[in-house]
Image (cartoon, rainbow, N blue to C red):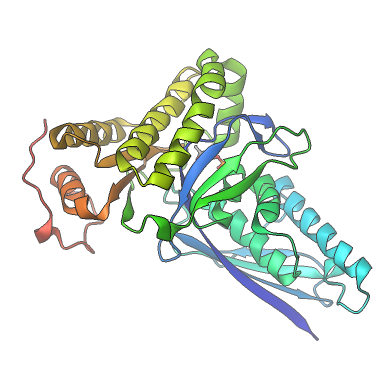
Length: 348
Ligand code: PMV
């Protein structure tokens, strides 16, 4: 039996300008454009391998060694799109194998605990879609393929690119112009670092899809955010990335995280993702920036209490030293040479 295989990895991406709100739920079309930083391949990532054979009668997915159901509408939508693009190729060239008709066996693994409350679905759908696009030898570019990943999980479309990525919301009702584009590669800003502080590894309180629906339907503040705040911030943030202007990038990142959590609070019933530890981290970072007289660190929080702190390499000892000082009782510092951290600061 002939088995055709391909593999792809996709890292987690962390939004600095948040996607929150769908104008079309089944196509995952957003109510605003967003920006994110894709972590490096050495950090948190999904590795997916896919095999197709005439002898595979059905599609199967193993996620972290466990056979999972492939019944979700989102996964089905991604597979259907990929198969239809492959069919186009097969109809033009009868000599290529009819992979679109074969079952797929998909094996997907995260190099981080799936239950750690970190955005795993973005990396998961991105790796799934890219590995199958490779197997099918689809000629489409990454922005085109990102439209398929978007249907799996909105934020997944951004994980198809490394570095700094924009998801342009688009205007079309069919989603043809709602795609990810590269703003700058990771190498553009080599001293940018991200620290992930796992505040809680509990499952999300409110899943993102239902949280977004509640906000879109009930928050007045949300209308202001998508019309008056985000469009301007989208351009400003892209420019700050291109200029490697950390102070502006960090300021906009923190403001947008707070704006997103504000519209969550303004929803009925209100949605709370931050906890007291998250709020302590917010306070610490603002105190640090104030003491330094400029923004050297920026926090952002997704739909949960875990923090991602962006900073430039040269400020690592200061930023991590401060966090270590307040949270050193927590597990997870083992890999760090804590003796070199700057823990001199005192913030109440
Ligand atoms: O793509 P989803 O449905 O997991 O939603 C992601 C929502 C946020 O993580 C809060 C923001 C974002 O832009 O990633």
